[in-house]
Amino acid sequence: MKNFAIGLLGAAAVATTILLVRQQKDVEPKDTRLIPAGETQPATISLERIRELGL
Image (cartoon, rainbow, N blue to C red; front, side, top):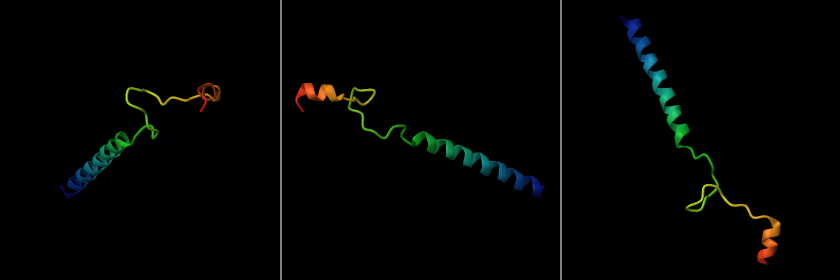
């Protein structure tokens, strides 16, 4: 009975660890760059476009 209880506690600890690791992976941001509101991807401006704008 004692071995069964220890095994059950070990299995519960492993399951809890797996769930916590999965939860931490979901919390981490996928992309650290800031994306303006309404945009799905950050815009990149070519050198030619910068020259056309006179910047």
